[in-house]
Image (cartoon, rainbow, N blue to C red; front, side, top):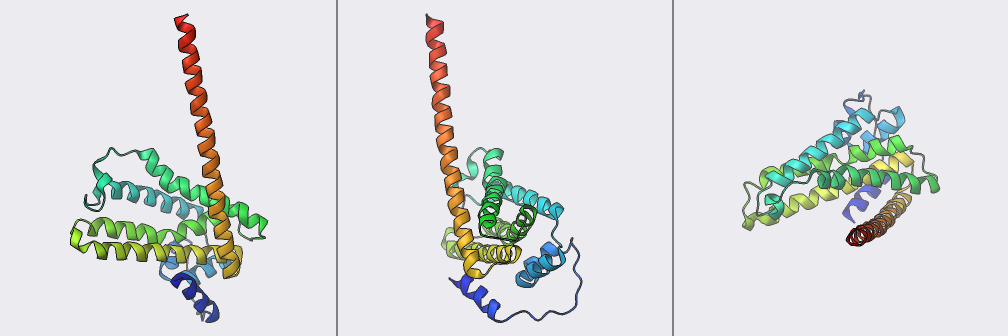
Amino acid sequence: SLVVAYIVYCDRHPINHYEIRISRKQMPLWCLRHPFRGFQEMRQENLHSLGATGIILAVWFLVSVMSSQLTAFHFNPAADEDLNIFVVLAKTVGLYALFVLCNWAVATLADGRGKLSEIAAYTAYALLPYIVTQVVLMVLSNFFSLEEAAFYNVIQAVGLMCTAAYLLIALREVHDYSLKTTLLTVGGTFLGMYFVFLIITIVYSMFAQLIGFLVMLYSELRLR
């Protein structure tokens, strides 16, 4: 609710633009510092970069790997478990790709202006607050005790809220939507992701049962 209220306030108090030139290479950090103005200028000047998008995703993946291993045990009980790179990849780049594809599909039906490449770039830029928060929490976890877990949780919550705000701002700009339409399409995007997960689960279950049946059939034939 705080995120939505802040975006509504900024909608009613437009930004006063002053002359300043930002390059494609500077745009990710510019959007991090000035989300409203940054995403607006990125759309107006077509300054998104797929190269920067790839770098952000690579950094997110690496930070997630490091966080899973270097976060203090009392904040991350799974730190002692064997690291599965493919699971981390699915939780980061896989979820990102699924969100982008579902948002593109929903926005296409809702007359959104964003192309697939633009949605990918804007979404990646919006993830920067979350990546920064992961790094901060990974470092602070090694200094905080369990008694200071409240501070850890507050920082985590603020990071998630900032990421949600950046994502709403980015999607609103890339599709040229109102806030209400943006919220509806984001809801449709998560609903689409749920159905994709459901389909994948059903297909995986059926495939596993088929493999099990074929193995059992092969074993029976060998015994005879």
